[in-house]
Image (cartoon, rainbow, N blue to C red; front, side, top):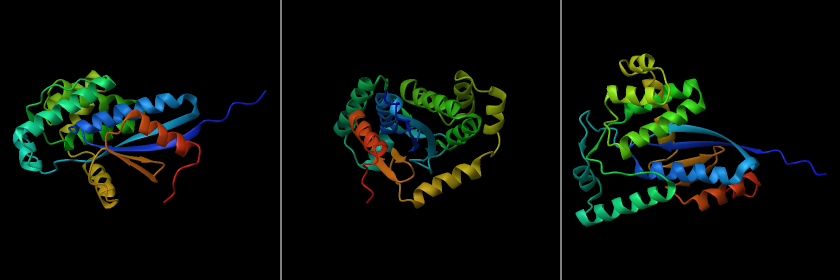
Length: 224
């Protein structure tokens, strides 16, 4: 009887922002692709910070105004883009509702960094909770009270979360990680870095993530 092959270990760094709809889509598709590989791989998933709008003020900005200014999109284009995102989310089991504002996300990234010090499961739970809070519930993910509530909702310590948010704790660490990926010329998200070598950009379909992961696990990846 042939012994079962040992699973291949993959490290995945998921570079993203919590107000990026394609990041939510990409993460869901990636996780479904990982599930399809079953016992063939073990995945060490790390969430890395990226701010789409690092200069966004505390009070945020009207979402339509922001997208029009940033991308020059017409109302028709914005509506079409939102419908595409809604439909892709629905396919993956995620609900995108209307969002009125875009917010500064630096404190959310600090909170995620804190969660990562507790464990990968805690970090993942907070990541998904923040994505749902913003995209499904339309919550202000720059507000300390909201962030604390989200943390408590996924089982994290509320007073400790509040203490992180009330100070500049983990500021240096988050800034360092942000700059690391900027220096690697990652300037759009989601960016999925596998084994620190292989980059998949954008909210790709489940099938594409699955193909890439299988090729890397089998040692057939392109090294160029």
